[in-house]
Image: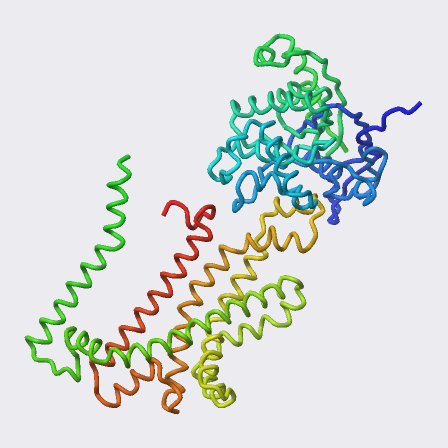
Length: 260
Length: 266
């Protein structure tokens, strides 16, 4: 009888800024544990706004958001969520290991245990040899890996990513996409991933939420067929191109139809 | 890229060129004073000054010690006070709004104008000079540290908020490290100002018979037309200023060298 609680329930949550600008029309959606969901849309469609509301960084103007059936920000809840920003947002004065350890230090985890978990998280993103480096000594892609390691070190159930690879070159981005997929399958995470790249959305996710701008809203909720393995071969396969077509079409439609 | 040659050239530019210029100028000065028979009570020759430095070594070193002591004490109290005031300012806009104008008032009032009052009010002569010099050195620390404590990367601030970091954790782990580059820039300005403050205060107090520092020596030498000694004292003040600056630049480099843009590629 005990169905697993949905990881995320968004119940007609909306966002209207104090100046009256409507950033996001009411949205309702349910995300099950273990899903990889992308929020896909152009700038101004409210995808980052939606993600920030889920993270509790931005309270919705109306509606509710539940994580495992508990309201976001409920002090009694332990949401075990990690947020990865568009920028790596690392502390430039601290080395990689200290940066990754930050959430554990803030939570008061004993040093020995924290260090062991940092080593584990760095190994997951392939940076075990770089713990003593300063962020500025690393490339943009490696800094992003550090940021992901910092997200994983708390062993989250829910990973929220706001265009994490948007500032990277395509080759690096593809590599990180593949690595992220491997992590997702291995760690059994629920991932919500914001992007404006259609191919990235289709490549990564089990479900694509297509959004549109002016006003920001959800247009369509498209399940993505579970094709495996998703390797570089898959990126160029006819099957993949087939799958890309539907969100592509949906985005085009939404940008053409005039809305009141 | 031939790195060593490049570094060699940089070293040459930074140290050797100014030194060569100094040797040249001092040489010209010496030749001019001898050739034109300039009396040493007008412009002493570099050799005269050097001789005075040796003959009055004990006297001048005693005076140097007094001035350095006042400068260092004033600088340290400006750092501690300035940092504390900056912390108070960032705790609340109300505190800042109420007190900031007075910090500015303190900054813009010439120390020469307040020094006599302070010297009358504060009985201990050393302490009175330290108070004067502290007032001169205080403002850059307050304003720089305040700006620094507020200059937190917004993304990192959001991250700390997301991790439910306490106010104290944000201060210690985020605000203070973010403020360091600004704080150190303030230190370098204040170091020089502390010395200026010490010398000015000594000038004001000197005639009252309380001072024995370098500025007092300059005054006395002036009255006695002992111009070589005046020059020697002046030289020591300048060297002290250079030493203060170099020490603070080294400290800045040590603290920020690994990560901050201002200290990279140097």
